[in-house]
Amino acid sequence: MSMYEVSFKLRHECPYRELSERFPGVSIREWYLQDCQVLELTAPDAEDDLLEEIDALGTVLHTSVDGPGLHVIVRSCACSLEESIVRTFERHNCVHLPPTVYRNGWEHYTVIGFDEGDVTALLADLDESREIDVLAKTSIDQRQVPHSSLLSVDRLFDGLTGRQLEALRIALDAGYYDQPRGASVAELAEETTVARATFEEHLRKAENKLVTNAGQFVRLLTEAQRDVLRAETREVTPADD
Image 1 (cartoon, one colour):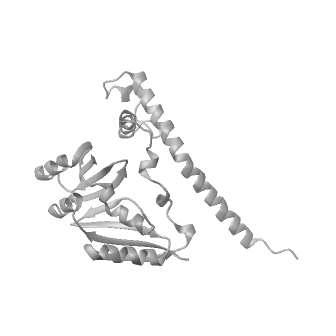
Image 2 (image 1 turned 90 degrees about the vertical axis):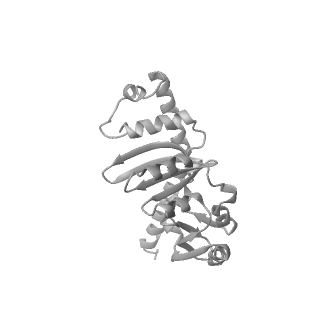
Image 3 (image 1 turned 120 degrees about the horizontal axis):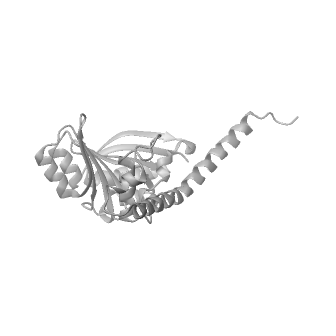
């Protein structure tokens, strides 16, 4: 039984796709997080009309304007996951490889199908109600499945509170995890309204939860690598006389 990786673009009613159509220079990447979406938007210019549209999407978590242009991170609930196209993928036993990319009025998706019949049925289902263009369909060996297909953002950040996520974001933006560190915990805490000890508690709990949540994927990945190594070793070991 062969597995397939399929990339395609389509059009249907979605505020993110419509935004990318109204502003052709905008690129939007979307990840699911619990019952919301996290959006990364980039654009060549910070137009006032575009900024107003972005503000209407949800909660703006980060904004920067530099040489390459505008970069914004938004937490949004504009599209319901229950009614989303991702549910259609699941009904056809296909795994969505995030992020979804919205550009020039099109939604771009990549999925893994575990059977060619599932992929064929999915594309036929989508074609009934949407304009769709299949960009690539490639048969893959099971060992070549991208590791990202195993990782859900929702599961990775499970249990983190809003304050813990904010502490992580502040630390990342300040280069706290760079070598050498770009800031100390005391300097990070100065960017908030809480005491140093409280901020450090939020940060350490966030780190601990992230490592714990990622542990299952680390174990799965290393075990898969061991299986590949064992198989390769058997292939090169001469048979006993």
